[in-house]
Length: 263
Image (spheres, helix red, strand yellow):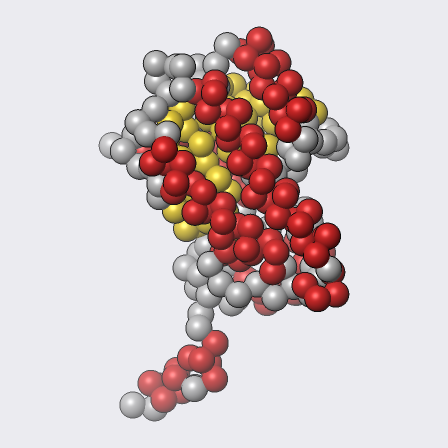
């Protein structure tokens, strides 16, 4: 029997939901029937649509606590509830830490850790009074679980975000569930800035055990699952959506495959 997820009647907010991974998450939620609001500092080039439905865009700088408070008041007035928050907004330019300096590092941590904390607190105030409570999903990264040269502050912030999710899952239980989706490399409209042309993308994809980069919708599928009743007993968890992770470099350096083939 096929398993379907129906989020009809539920209100979802996706931060940074106008493009890339965020837009993929928003489209998956729309397809599942949710009413979806996406926020960012500026609207995307085109509306986020799926299954004949369109996400509503509202402007927000998630780094501004006063703006976050006003935003959630507006959300409450418009919908009267909030069932799901996906903390997706984030990112970091490439730069070695010593060259980038402490101020840039602080801004990266602010966007990727402090801002999700601020938004989560505002969402909790809305969710804790609801009979069904709510669900919060942090969009983490494998950068938070391994060395991240060139994006060290980002990796540190994502490690902190996953720890924050586990702590909030305890503090806010049983009313609000909090989980993390730990993403690996995802193919978006900005992938060429990190990995180059199509040949570069293919070469990077071959380093992943499943042989390719993820699609934004696959991050969305994970969020739909965690928001659904199928995940009603899942909280404080980290769901890794990374195609199997990374093949350890020492295996290639040791020529393990060649020795195995010669047996």
